[in-house]
Length: 458
Image (spheres, rainbow, N blue to C red):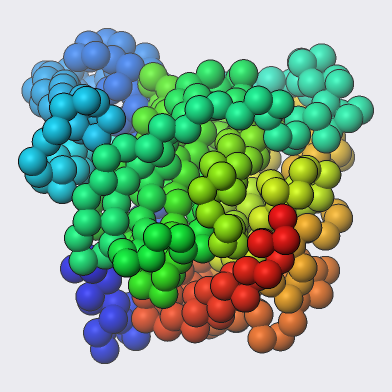
């Protein structure tokens, strides 16, 4: 358990996990994290060049900016190199043939180096002060360009969300065990031609159980769980109750971030086409993981997700109605979900600082065209998972994936009252509170375990 998790489990946690924290978090993300991340991403593309850095942002340099920036960019390159070296050591130790005596130490070193690299965002604060920095690098296509690229998909969207015809080989790493459980990683080639990269997933499984049930958990936008120290593991309780958790590294996050971008930025900056590519890739990638699990366990397999991840999990569970039975999940956990992706992308609290609606209109995306396109990503059918095996967790003060949208979804899915948990919290304090108040996770674990008969019938 991390220091932050211990704090949340203490009496002080009851004070922190409240709506005031969400107001603070929203201000931090909107005023600092996103603009500083854009500067951090510009440094990635600059490779030490101040001129290229300013062109990437873009902002006009002030009189002393270049001289002040030079040592920051030099330090950035040193930390980048250290993070890359630690990643290579990690790769060789966990996936290579050599045997390392301290795999836990290798992982700690990787996270230390990556955290210092990520932490370079702070060094760009002086550049941020006194001027506006766009939080997103935009690369939008017009509706006409998008339609030309995806004409067949609009006619037959099921093709976009079909499982791979041939499952790629999934490679499992070496493992280490600590008080939390057994840690290891999976990796495989993404079945998405558009991504053409490698998917990595972090696995935490309970010790002493050779065949536990599994939940594949999908993170929200800009969440890079495997690359920051001390990240709150809001579903860690599941492992303590005998459930294997698999956290998937999403497209354009973590090891999959494109040059000159930060984690999740491309999803935002290429809407709505980027949304379609992201969802299509992750749906197919999760199908690979479900298949991998089915080959190794007779126990149930659930899907879970938070925020954007909850929407993808529901999309998968809905499209899986047309998939082979073994690829269909047995239970569903939706944390801070919304009914329609546009409710968050256009009307949510982040959309105001991203200016997604304004930017989309500039290239011809009217509200009607957006709604028609986003309809591909908003399943109207019920998931293949029965409502009595679906758990939803909502916060009344959620403005990122608006609470009213989540309520509409819960009502449309006709979830039993015992499976719906509504808390007086916001988008960030709702998952935080699961560290303290574990009832929703325990409920999901029991429903997942109870699905064993259905899973065995497959």
